[in-house]
Amino acid sequence: MGGDVVELNSAPAPGSHIRMSRAGISPIRLAATSLIGIAFVFFGLFGPANASGARHSAHAPGSVLPPIGQDVLAQLSGHAEVTSGSRSCSAALTGSLTEQVVGQDPASGTDTVAENGFRLTGTESCGAAHAPADAVTVTQSTGDQRGTLTVVQQFPPRYQQSLVLDLTVSLAPAAGSTAGPTVLTSHRPVTLTGTPNTFPPQGEGYRLAQPVDLVASAKPDTPVATVTAFPVTISTGTGSS
Image 1 (tube, rainbow, N blue to C red):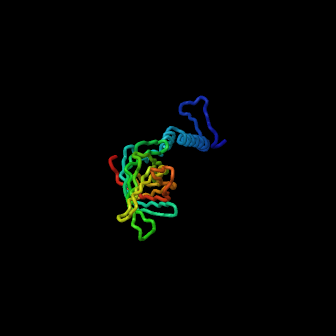
Image 2 (spheres, helix red, strand yellow):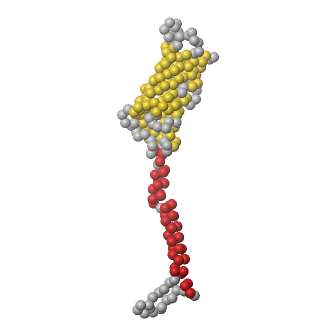
């Protein structure tokens, strides 16, 4: 049988040997090596190390969430578009807002963010060049309102943020006007949404989720005007954390 024969002495004498040719060993060695390789691959896919990795992946959405207690002083700039009957007005506004992370759900990758001190001031223009501009102040009606910050992408980080605010709009007539001051409130909370790449936001844009009616306190169910657009840019520095 040539090189493929395995010679065995049933009772080996001193100095005798068992000889296996290279041709006979190679197929066996190849099969054993293949089986070991398959075992390593299987263990790598389903073994404890990868199971640990899977657990890490399941919690990954929370890994880039700002920590509870982080607070932010936000600088705001934007403008509001308001309609009242056939009249359309716009107001250029600047101001500030304080945000603080007060809750966290790592499983869903969401922080709860308290909004306080929202305040914008500016002047209103209604398209009449000769008309004096009213001073506009937009403030938060209710303190400590809660919005959300959700991780939508791990790398590079990207978030979905919603600011939920009850607002009061105060109009102070310009000097010389015979009109009295006007104070209106949002009929329901105003929601501003944005997709910042960082938190605190740095020059990120937020927009009105849907139009909101403004009402007078004497007739809370009768819309006086409607905020149709309210784009705001937020740039921040951190407070205590």
